[in-house]
Amino acid sequence: MSNLVPEISKRRTFAIISHPDAGKTTLTEKLLLFGGAIRLAGSVKARKAQKHAVSDWMEIEKQRGISVTSSVLQFDYDGYRVNILDTPGHQDFSEDTYRTLMAADSAVMLIDVAKGVEDQTKKLFQVCKQRRIPVFTFVNKLDRYGRNPFELMEEIEKVLGIRAYPMNWPIGIDGNYKGVYIRKQAKIELFERSGEHGQWALPSTQGSVDDPAFKELLGEEIHQALCDDIALLDVAGETFDFDKVTNGELTPMFFGSAMTNFGVRLFLEDFLEMAPPPVPRMSSEGFVAPDNDKFSAFVFKIQANMNPAHRDRLAFMRICSGKFERGMTVYHVQSKKPIKLAQPQQFLAQERTIIDEAYPGDIIGLFDPGIFGIGDTLCQEGSVFTFQDFPVFPPEQFARIQAKDTMKRKQFVKGMTQLTQEGAVQVFHQPDYPVESFVVGVVGSLQFEVLEYRLKHEYGVDILMNKLPYSIARWLIGENLDGKAMKNMDSGLLVQDIKDRPVALISNEWQLRWVVERNPEVEFLVVPEDA
Ligand code: G4P
Image (cartoon, rainbow, N blue to C red; front, side, top):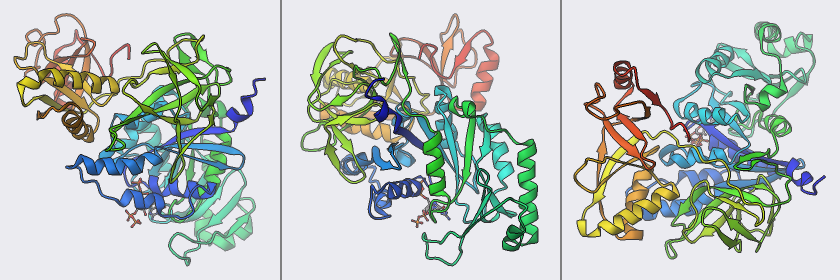
């Protein structure tokens, strides 16, 4: 047995996926508190409270300087080493949010009990589904009015295409919840409504659901409703199948309240027990097992301009196999160059620290002199391969950009080429367009601002940017894919991506349906085929 195995088996690397306001910051903070990684509740929150000054990139940069410390949060709990990957949301929602999921071994899907499955959650869930990583659901805000849990289960199944297995069950009637019934332990835990905000006591009672003590505690009506629900779940519900969880076909579902710290510890403990440790990753040479002694890692995120004085970049990489040791020399496959990993950084809740060693599942940040691209592989000399290509994520906003000053054309093209390679935006071109310009596609509008700022400050190029009225990109497969041959494309735009694959930009779903119907001989793909 490789001596890496004990380190690997205790690691859990996951991301929390949710829609803004579902309670991700609050839940993260509670998890960190359990791990002793932060002393005071409120420190993660304080970070979030700092408002974005989106018009001023220096401000965003400062914000980044803080928020990057939370790009990965590591803590120990009950013999596990936990890595929480931060998935930027709100105005920060970008391709980075999707890419972060490539570095995770599992995901926690956080849902607001009153709102159910929301838009951003849906998008992030799809990426988890494609990767077949296990998703664990935490239904939050149970301390206040919420929707019927059967309805939520049905919504998860209908909208996301995954069945849910409730690990615990809300007690109460008509969305007025009193606590939860823990199925595995046949135990009831109730809220104590009298405590201070966030510090409610948790009385609990254990016994079978039809225990008279429960009836006394809950009252006749609520007790009966609970008995009925549990009977229904036991008879008609999904059976718990661990293999299905591991394959991403079944999501264990927990109910609780992050703010009042209700059900969080229970969730954390069950989650850590069920969530997978780092698993083998696909590469050009087949699967690479984490306990392979040779070090390997891939870059999943590049954060630029961390320090305004130095204009440096930080490349985040996920270790996939072997042991990382500070100062080791590795081989950067894409540039075909050896690189000494001299100043690796790791992130605790509040500070960056230089690390000496790390294992599969861990994330390290490296200063990047401008050589790394998204998806790049690092390995040990003598075992050269590349990890699977990163997928292309469907952009949703588009703009045409060109250099204000045509004399700056060369710098403009150089900047665009480098920033595209780094994964800051997706670039498309329109071969017959008379002016030197690019059509850029992004997932979130912050990416436009970053692009504009970086072109100006790193390449000295001011740009003109015109937002385009499209929200959908489809990669096309078929014959005669030009503007004249395709029908009903007058309100759309035909472009090519960096690999010269034809792409249609279309304004909305309605237009898309119309174009698809009128061009039955063409295939419309959400992402390119070989992505
Ligand atoms: P996010 O990171 O997903 O955007 O969500 P965040 O944790 O910031 O939570 C969004 C709002 O929901 C916050 O309220 C937070 O207090 C509240 N919240 C989180 N968990 C729970 C919960 O279990 N129950 C209830 N009732 N509320 C919860 P806010 O008014 O925006 O901020 P604050 O004034 O409470 O700090």
